[in-house]
Image (cartoon, rainbow, N blue to C red; front, side, top):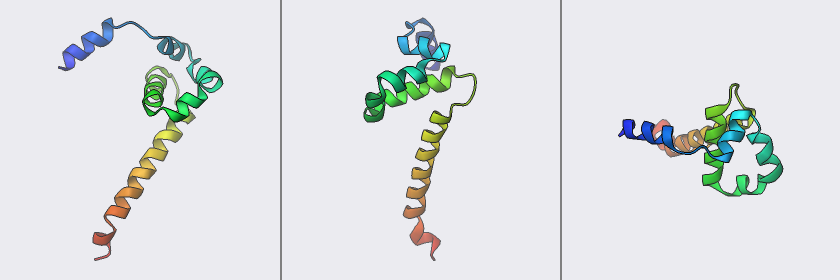
Length: 88
């Protein structure tokens, strides 16, 4: 299964967003032209974040902040869910 995914990834066409990510212009393009869609559409946001992470040569604060926020939410849920066992 992993081999098929690698083959398909290699032969699929490069998207416009991937080209922008490779040149380092995707973050600026999204903030100028597609900010509303980025903020409202979760699937689109996840696709863009994946491309930013995949093609970035250095850490991006935008991506790090969003993933840290998701981590905090998950940990908060975990602490809330396990509170009854921690009190015993």
